[in-house]
Image (tube, rainbow, N blue to C red):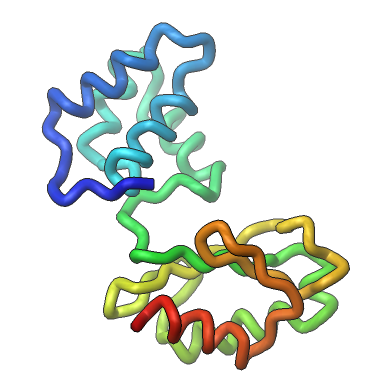
Length: 158
């Protein structure tokens, strides 16, 4: 994901929409392209998407809120995903995640004050045998505990 230094203009948003509008099922490709360009789905893009696809604001909101990877605000420089699936829960993942969020002073989908880390829930990283699991960027981590998560956050915050 490339984050834009400045917000996209209406013309730039329109160009992204038009580049995907002719696809079959264009909404998800449009949302992914906007998020790739901006780091999130800008609020000013919503009416343009609705108009281009002839959908309501409620329909658009339903799609954006259904898919956990779409953001309404930019993420931190690094995204830490913590598994919330049953195997990880049974191995202490809930307590580990809650403790980390408390130490960082944020909630799920929150970003640290220094903008370094956004913490997001994910439902299965496919690392059930090494639960609890997490992922920082593209790197999957198994058997995470408080100390391991603290090290990861410290490394990417430096």
